[in-house]
Image (cartoon, rainbow, N blue to C red; front, top):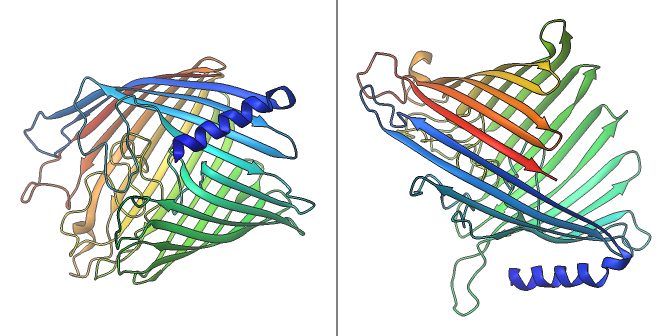
Length: 410
């Protein structure tokens, strides 16, 4: 079905190519990653290293009557290591990482249908809400239907349906398709203050019901200070209030150039029954591995690389980020980020120091070789604390990640 849809889009693009504005582009990224001591051992020399390549080819065209067609193909692969379960999980939608091309996007967008200020998008499309806490396609696309309406007083209404795990067409099954239904809206005030409210309902074969209400505000306090705040209420058979709050300040220093200071505190609530904050469609990966708070442990507000052992004791993921960035040269960026991760929803009544998961210090360098070509180096130093340390171990343990990449696009 997806192949047929892609062919149809390409035929449409060809049919109207003489009357349309066509945009064609490509992206290529090659890099390498090495994890040292991923099992948090005091004596282990275990390593997990591999090289990778990502390639994208995309085409977008504006056809007649406010119709846009978009197609993006993605190819990913690793070499130097046999990939395992860390690259493919049931919930990540990460497949075809042996360089087999896959359809990342293949959609039709109808703008301002008739005389109404309504856009309609159908097909496999990019979809991310806010920071992606609850919805983020992670650069892999979602099969979705989406409608957006532009109302008076700078209010934008939004509704979409995401479908996953299509059922087989040649056999009967009692399992349902997995889906996410959402409705929400965004209000912008004076171009500097954005207020967003969404209601999400997840549906699957699980007997447990899951839904979320998200309220978010972001924008700019004044010149040089950005802010973001989001509060999420879990519902159905899940419960708890989760939230994040952060701010980024920008200035220019004489010797260090453009400088930024970034702070964020994110709380994913846990409960005694283990049914706390657990969104299925939120940001988790970068297409190969964990991606989130920390280059190494890539935490989200619900889990992180390696997971929390003894979930019946430790509940909730809480992350604090403090970062600083410099641009000493117009083509050079340096960033330093410090993370502390812990779990404070503990039904056992443990003291605070027993709930520490780990701390991480990241350093990254990005060099702009040309306007469209970039080099990046990254180092993440992770120290597992009480929860992740081997039982009885008191000495400091170090695990780290070293990565490099070269990327170009046009």
